[in-house]
Image (cartoon, rainbow, N blue to C red; front, top):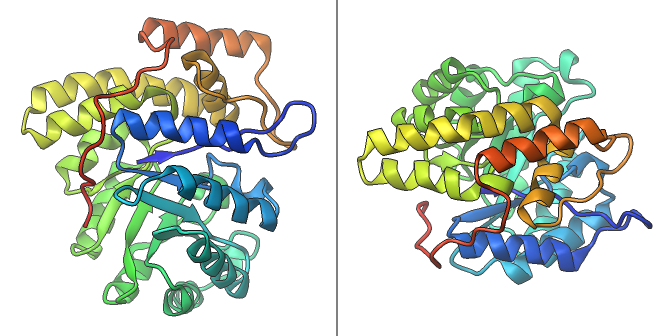
Amino acid sequence: MVAITTPFDAATGEVQPVQLRDNARVLIEAGIDGILAAGSTGEATLLADDEFRRVVGWLRDTVPADRWLLAGTGRESTRATVLACRIATDEGADLALVRAPAYYGSSLSIAAMVEHFRRVADESPIPVLLYNIPKYTHVALVDAVFTALADHPNILGAKDSSGDIKNFAVYRAAVPRWALFVGNATLLQSALDMGAAGGVLAAACYARTVALDVWDAFGKGDKAAAGAAQERLTPLHRDIVAAFGVPGVKAAMDVTGLTGGPVRGPLADLSGGDRAKVAELMRGAGLTAVHAGAGAREPRLS
């Protein structure tokens, strides 16, 4: 699945619904199984509440019913997170991706964190995925949180964007029945080897065919082909997502012919030199034109 960006108008700063839908349509036609709206790559914390609502609704208009629409609903309070889950439900999202509260994160005990996620899951009308993204929240979800919530009927699983395969392995052992997704594209094949349900990847915004090559080859049991595709995918994450963050993802999308466009302040767009580095990397990978895959496929998660 793809953690999609949110396109903004360069002059007004407003969200561009036509470009958002067009980007999603290309990704869907490539054969991806779902889209995450308003995640970290979608600049979720920089969206107003009404923008969040509209982004989810606009994407539901484009994402067909046989594909997954996830929405990033994590907020700083339990109450606000529940409200975001309800808004996402009203706009047609299938799953809520819930990050840890960040501002008071260092003051929250494991018990407090468990209670937060439990209350959100209790009250969310749609199933919840927990989201570990310590790069941005500066709060690492420990496996004890997962273990305490393992039997909650409305928690489907989790996404781990720690970038640490050992951490993913700890999660896998703690909640063997959960659907676990990896958020770092360099670890896609390794996570699949450990039983991951899949990936929710920012790199797939501009390298969807390469990510799908890993996924498809692995699904066919061709580990050699999966490994070869992973070798292509790894630098496309490491040198763009990891190196430049959301501005790099958007710059890479521009190279492929999708709408990346500007980021929203306080984030800053890449310098001309860094944009040139991204463009050169994309040219070297053969990703300088839109590649739409071979049509629809059945989603892999039931």
